[in-house]
Image 1: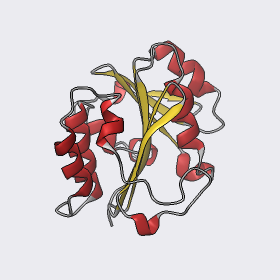
Image 2 (image 1 turned 60 degrees about the horizontal axis):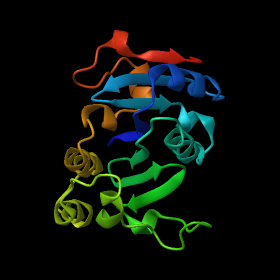
Image 3 (image 1 turned 45 degrees about the horizontal axis):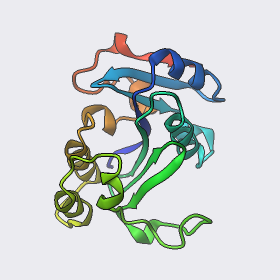
Image 4 (image 1 turned 90 degrees about the horizontal axis):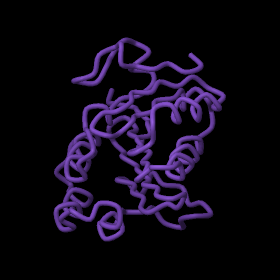
Length: 187
């Protein structure tokens, strides 16, 4: 069995403000603040039964004062990686590694495949060809490997990006993070 995780990362929002925003949620949340300027949010998204909650949270956090961007990521059994990058309340880019698993909605008729040109609007330093290669490559056996490589290119910490609320609840913590750094909200 592979990894299952959903999480949200945001860059530039204060820990105090994140605590306020996360306290408004109707399900337990764990926050890991200030890892290279990023905060990582893990909520009981699977248990909430609300499949749109991660996107709504990322969108809302991208509108917070100081936010440079927010991203929500999902890995389903290491077969599918999905991301949505948000800036100023607008979705900048989205990606599904397995288009067959995508279900059309009011935003996208087809599975979004990621666009390095759009990501460059948030990450001006990226090499678009390198990012495109990561998004299109068939060499990744596990979705988390593609996720880590993409985040490495975008300069987003990788270890906390492949975690989920349930992993943290079961005592697992990302490499370089200690249990005492976890902020539990509503749990």
